[in-house]
Image 1 (cartoon, helix red, strand yellow):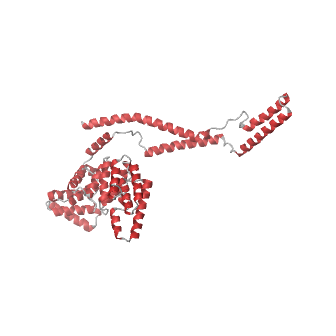
Image 2 (tube, rainbow, N blue to C red):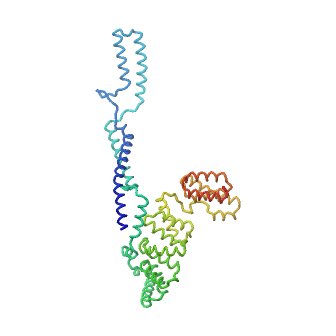
Image 3 (tube, rainbow, N blue to C red):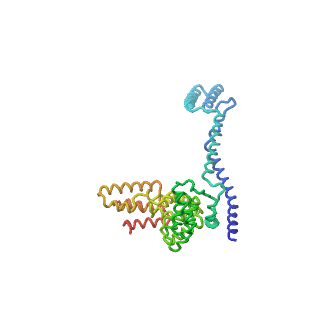
Amino acid sequence: MQLVLLRRRINHYIGAMTGEWIIFGLICAALLALAVLAMFGPMWRTRLKDAEGKVDTDIDIYRDQLREVDRDLERGVLDEAEAARTRTEISRRLLAADAGARSEAQDAPRTASRTVAAVLSIGLIGAAAGLYFSLGAFGYGDVPRAVRLAASEERRAERPLQLEAEAANPILDAITQAEPETAEILQALRGATFERPDDIQGWAYLAQVEASIGNMQRAARAQERTISMLGDTATNEDYVRLLDFLVIGTRGYVSPEAETIALTILRRDPTNLPALYYAGLMYAQNDRPDRAFDLWRRVVEGGDQSIFHWRLAASQIEDVAAQLAIDYALPDQRGPSAEDLEAAEDMAPEDRQAMIQGMVSQLADRLATEGGPPQDWARLISSLMVLGEEDTARTILAEAELAFGGDVQAVGIVRAAAREAGLIE
């Protein structure tokens, strides 16, 4: 019943979005038309011409005035002296107008100008439409956060189970492609576990050998049997091994069973990196980049960079951060860490100063040009205090507070670092 109501709410918003899309389309069309008119309108228009096809310029006006002076002289309206002065003044203006006309560029042919204007207008409209269809979301209006979260939870609840996902991604038995020695061992292990189904070591070894040749789905079944027999004595390493087999066996998909295992591990050990990574991957696959970012951040900022789960999280965290409009940089791109500063204590004073100064300069340049999360600003302030540049640290603190504005949590992180460094009380 709840799912039916949820679908009705989503359909309601989709109907409202149709009207919003029409208005949005009309506004975009009007703005595009104004841009085309402003840019290419002058190329389309040509100057007015008289009946003989000549451009009506100031030169023609002054020539008419000279003829008018001759007619006034014949009618007696002007005497010779006045006529001569008038001719002189008009002639001076005529010469100036002629000189200016010679310096002006000639009009391009009307047909060529209009053809170029039409081609450029069509090109501009096509480029704008192509850019929108490439980067925009056609027909996708605003959806309230509550509806998005509800849709995410529904998607998570209805996603395929492990065996369904494996059936959709069948993997052939790789034993025929294995080395003869490995294939022989594997055949023997399969036979042994069939004959002795309660042999825990046999099942554990079978899981490892199956995984070594790429039979992840078979490895997962063997590891599940191993953990089932181990019971309460199964370790987190046993569960992590099973997690790897399950996710790799479905080509990166985190099933409900894999999610349950990850959460079980985290209840035992909240800092377990593989479990944190897989939990984050599950949220990323179900339109919750906010939770994925929080979990992967714990992996990349506090984990061992040598394990492949760290590398997987590091390769994806910037993408989910971009979805949240967060400018995030990996820890190894941020500048001096606490460990860097501690290691520098044993260096010669001038070497230590040069090393820290170089890293601080890189960090400051990146924050000035690209911005960054509050942790980066906090690190910069701490580093500047180590260098004794208190005034610069105060300036950076003020810039950070201005940059984050109403983000109370971000400002709190920066001010906490400033307080710890002794910059503020």
